[in-house]
Length: 358
Image (cartoon, rainbow, N blue to C red):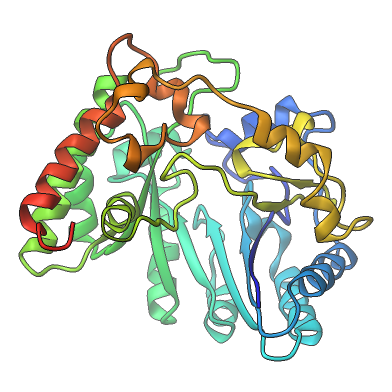
């Protein structure tokens, strides 16, 4: 039995918003060919069949749809994809579906489909209306309407928030509580591949301050019996108690992902969908071939400089240097690491409360 997750981009980098800080739009513009169109059902069937061929019977297969904005592919595409997956499914295998969206294209038809097929939906909302609209093209009301429709139809969902220089941790947490968002994933805004600083770029000390303040609010909430899942903090707790984390990069070790672009081109990581790391095409190669190709080897050989403090860092066993795409954020200031400052604060507080288990 195997477990495999395929991150599928049915609309490539196409999006109805094109937010200025979008890391995938930045990556796509750096590639030859840029956007790769819309995925055909033939490419979808090739992907599904080859994933099942690789995994065999009794496996757990997850298809995660991202973009760009994946809903631009249209409801018919997703209906055909799920039907093909059910048709090609091997004996005893489990299928899981999830999708990340800006929320503006969600309607009753999509919601009925999501509910019927057990989709988990991630909706990108950066916080209260003024902050969200400043980066996400005035889309707050439409995104929140999408959330209302998901709730109306009983669809499972979580919230993803991009953290920028203007994000206040306390305001963001208040927003989550006010809207009963209890499963959330803050992700930290990446600078463009060029390294250029922008008005939304996070400073190193801003990052540490944000993480500590958000953790304090999360810790107070769960300590008083409230339910609140924040992916980063739950992964840190898991690393301390079990030595494992589900979040890629949480312990500084890359895992190969199967990222499949709309034309079938594969890449090893959503943060590295670049020409240098291209990994064959699912229409022409098996998953085995893709996981042994030169593009994947180059991805694992590619490194980003660690912070000089990593060698003697007391939390290296938890952090491992962090996700390599984020190291430019950690390395902004000589003699200082924001991740270490935040982790020392978080771990100290967790150990003081769960000393028997950590």
